[in-house]
Amino acid sequence: MIRFYCQHCAHKISVRDKDIGKHGKCQKCGAAIVVPAESTILDFLCEYCDRTISVPKSHAGKKAICPKCRNTFIVPTIPAPDSAPTQSYSGDMIARTTDSTHGLTLMDVPEEYKLKEEPPGQSKVSEQAIDRQQETEETEPEGHRSLPWFIDIFLYPISIPGLMNLGIFTVIPLLLSLLMRLLGPFSLVLVFPAFLINVAIFLYIYWYITECVRDSAKGGRRAPEAFATAGLGEMWSQSLHIIGCCLIFLGPAFFYSLYSQKTDLAFWLLLACGVFFFPMGLLSCIMFDSIRGLNPILLIPSIFSAFFQYFGLVLLITGIVLGFRAIPTIQTDTTQPETIIMILLGGLFSLTLLYITFVVAHLLGLFFWRYEERLNWEV
Image (cartoon, rainbow, N blue to C red):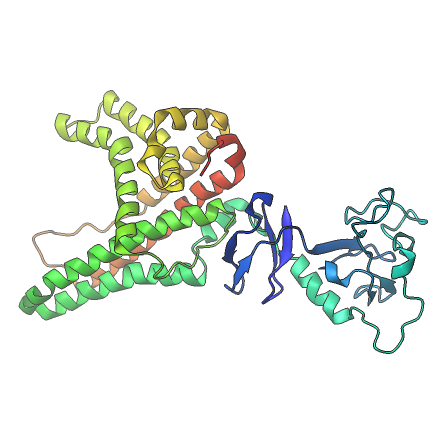
């Protein structure tokens, strides 16, 4: 695990070792960052009160004051590349003390780093600096949650980009419907432009869902910022992936019901198989960014590599979808024009549907984040 501070806002970030050298954005300030080749955070215990403190490695060997017990100490250091191999000053907090109640003492600091006297201008770490670093220490790494997971997953769309996208996806179609309703017979001039706008929004929705899956697969805990970063061609491609997965896995049950005009045992078997394979198929298709992700030779071993965890994922997603279906819907008379109230209720229903869709996309990406090694996908 590589741990480092964002150079713009001091937010502590944790990523996997294989992400060394990759570019990304800080989840707190949104600034561009590059993953360093090694961790730049030094963790140690105050030798007097055992408070865990995190500071940049550049502070090693400097005098500091513990913000909890207010005792002065020297930040421990790591060995230089040419130091003796028998010495170890790593941040693993190995118990090498003269007092068993403390974790790390000044005995662990090489003699050349001990500051017996502090001459004028001597560099040191202030108490306020340690307090700021301690604030970042309390920040959860990527992939970890401050709330129980079964609560936190439903908060996934609650971010500024997530709420803005929810607003775009629901408010614009709602305003178009209201405008056409108010214009009455003159609304015919808006039919074609409104159709094009709705198509563009739906393409963007499908594309943003795939971005939610990919961001969650990297450990993201809230809906990502992804405005205007894709063209219509890429949006169309991602839309085809989602629509294609729906047709392949859920289409057989739908077409059987349409053809036979009944929902018998064969229908429920087809539906159960489709529901079981659909999440893994969609995840694979999105992560590989190709229809080749639907190869059964890839999907079936992946499912059995984490079978019980995947089965739990399917049950959770199914429960969320059934819970949404249980929401009472307003029955309308299709022979009568929609009223403004009915249009507003339809917009609220669409907002709820999109919110649940983002949560499900997060669950798919989170499954990949946790069981990537078992899946053994080279994506």
